[in-house]
Length: 226
Ligand SMILES: *Cc1c(COP(=O)(O)O)cnc(C)c1O
Image (cartoon, rainbow, N blue to C red):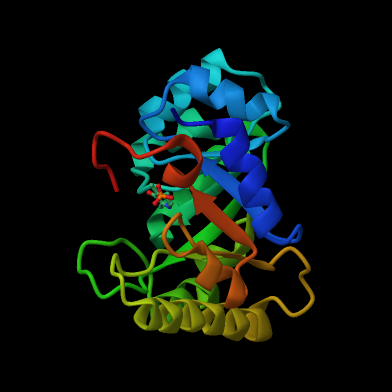
């Protein structure tokens, strides 16, 4: 038996209060999310838009939803009315669509820039040079409806924790470089979203401010989704 409430309380004892926990509920039923919600937890993450929309309809409106998976531009408008943070911004075009839809909806959307930090080819994300190009572009300077809050990354799926640590150090370095060059005066650019069930303790040691944790809270997923 999986005890979701106990799992959350154990995690909260292990993770410093300054680090926020996104409870990653992908593939899990609304009833599981409610168990977590009833412990007082409010931040949940999903990686698929359709699933997020259907869960949002059935759950209390004070949940803070984070999108953590690849987002197609044509789905942005469904999220914009209620999403709390889009962690997986992985292209300039996507950011500009978010800005545009947010303007129409009269909102400002919190976003993280997803970096490609893993050795695997398949993971989405920017490199530092691409982000410099984006932030230097006239296009970006016109975006008034996105609030860039920091960076996000997924380490390589491996047992080699030294490699994972290097990848997290690299992401933290990207955050510092951007902070220094573009966001010195902007307090909101402070988030480093890194660390999952298998590597969150290393991530926290390396300066994570947001960890995204699924299986340690809700149990293993039957369907393997990344
Ligand atoms: C599924 C997922 C997680 C959580 O994974 P666990 O290993 O179950 O903690 C975190 N981040 C992203 C982007 C994910 O897709």
